[in-house]
Length: 186
Image (tube, rainbow, N blue to C red; front, side, top):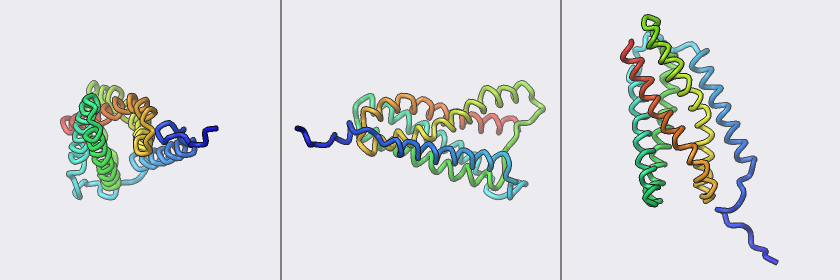
């Protein structure tokens, strides 16, 4: 009779952990929806910390770079460098989230000008809508992927990371494009 417990890499992830991450992500998404669409901005004139949208774009760009570098490292089977790159992407994304929240508390939502109907349609429906929906989906995926890695559940980590990586990369790159379009047309 084998009385040894399964190794951490083969142990099943407790459903309670996954559901907790999903619940936290849902609450965060609801908070951000309220903040962006219902919370009145504190600094309507945009005079305080006006650099925050540009900072968000830079942080999104840095995240994309970390993700691309991390992908390159994992393809070369350089696990420590991959891990460092992914932590870099996670840290930059976390700082982005803080700056994003601060920007929306202060300035509210930036609306695309109606004077450019074709560009506005492309911005809203081709760029912004998929960006927002995938960002909502991506948050729990990132957290679960990190959890799996940190707890040594590498086979499951790899399976989920195959989906998390392209979505996270798209959200990061499209975040830069959102900023660029808003800046160009404002």
